[in-house]
Amino acid sequence: MKIEAVTLREIRMPLVHFFETSFGRTTERRILLVTLHTDGPEGWGECVAGEDPFYSEESVDTAWYAVEKHLAPALLGKTIAKGADVPALLGRVRGHRMAKGALENAVWDAEAQEQRVPLWRLLGGTQTEIACGVSIGIQNSVEQLLEKISTELAAGYRRIKVKCKPGWDLKVFERIRARWPEILMSCDANSAYTLGQIEHLKQFDRFNLLMIEQPLWHDDFYFHALLQKQIKTANCLDESIHGRRDACAAIELGACRIINIKVGRVGGFSEAVAVHDVAQQARIPVWCGGMLETGIGRSHNIALSTLPNFTLPGDVSASKRYWKEDIIEPAVEVSPQGLIKVSQEAGRGFQLKTGFIEQLTVRKQTLRAQ
Ligand code: SMG
Ligand code: MG
Image 1 (spheres, rainbow, N blue to C red):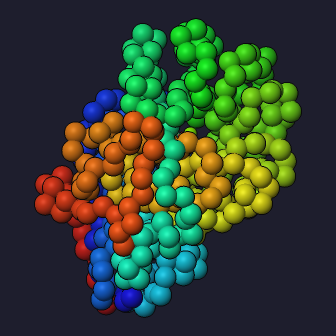
Image 2 (cartoon, rainbow, N blue to C red; image 1 turned 180 degrees about the vertical axis):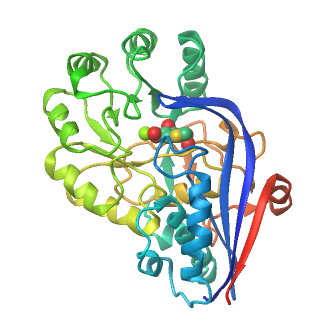
C-alpha cells in the first residue's frame, strides 16, 4: 500500500467514572488517533499515551510532536507491504514507542482490510474468545470499591485487579478477601513501593494474589528480581517491559513470573508479538494490559489477545465501563461468562463512527506526501 497522507487528531472523551492509580486520577481522556490514507483501505491507530507523562515518559503532546515531525514523514510517500515492515522505517527515532505503535498498528489495520482477513488472524491469533478481567482504580472509600467489585463479578468478569499504593493495600485486600475468599484477584502498584518496604510487601503473600504488578520502579528489573526471591506472590512486569530484549532480561534475571503486554508500551504489534513469543518459549504467561482505550485501541487489544500465550484474563473489558458512547460499532461487549468473542470479519471487526469522531475532535492535522 502507498501511504499518501496521515491525519493526526485529538479527541476528548469524559470517562464514565474517574480512574485513579498510585500516580493520579483521570476524569477525561485526551486521545491521539492517527489515520493512514493509502491507495487502498484507510488504517486507524490509537496512541495510548496519557494526558501527562506519569505512566511513561510519553504524553499526547510528545506523541503528536513525534508523529508530526519524524514518524509520519518517515512513512509518507512510501509503499509498505505490511505492518511488520514499519519498525525498520521508524527505527531512527529512539523511544516514542506509543507514537510509533499508533502508526504501525494503523498499517496492520489497513493490511488486514486489504488482505480481507481478520486482524487477529494476521497477527497469528488462535483463540476465538478471550477471557476478560477488570482493573478497578483507587476509590474514595473501601465501600465504594467493594460495590464496584460486586458489580463486575455479577457482570461475569473473570479476574479482579485492584490498584494499590501505601495506605491503600493490606486493609483493602483484607476487606475484599473477607467477602470473596476465592476470586481470582491481583493488584497493580504502578511503581508505588521501594525495596525498603520489602517487609510490608511480604505481607501481600497472605492474600493469595494471582500477581502483584509493577511494585517497584518503572524502569527496573534488578530490584524486582531481588524482591521476587523473597515473596511468594508472582511479580508481573508492566512499565519495565519496552520490548523483546527487556522481556528476555527480566525473565533471565527472575524479575517476574508473568508479563503484561501493552501494544503501545512496546511500540506496536510487531514488538508485542515478539514479547509474546519469548515469554511463551520461557513458559511465562502473558496477558493484555489496557490504557483506557477507545474502541480503536480496544479492538486492537482484542486482536492481540488471541495469540496462544495470552492465557490469563486481560484488562480488556466492555466499552460501557469507560464511555457513554464508544467511537466504534458495535461497542465492545463482554458475555455473562466474562468472554469477548472475536469477529470473523476482515480487519479490526468493528466499524468506526466517523461522524461521532469528528464531533469529538478538538485538533486535526493532515500531512501529505510531498
Ligand atoms: O484500560 O482498563 C484499562 C486500564 C487498565 O489498569 C489499567 N492500566 O498500569 O496497567 C496499568 C494501568 C495504566 C493506566 S494509566 C491511566
Ligand atoms: Mg499496570
